[in-house]
Length: 77
Image: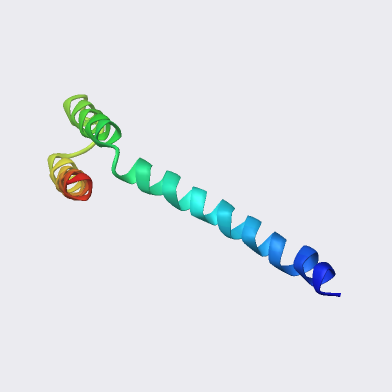
């Protein structure tokens, strides 16, 4: 009976927890990846230069992205 309980309950739960842990690690890596954040800054600058966004939108989004960049740098230290 205990072996059956382990197979039906504990093993799937451990596998699911492992999957969630990997997804969490991947999300953290993406959030703290400085190169993708810098690419976002370049994209914003390009949008502003070709008049796709206003100066106010650019400044607001730039400050948000710079905050993410600062947080990513702090996380890696």
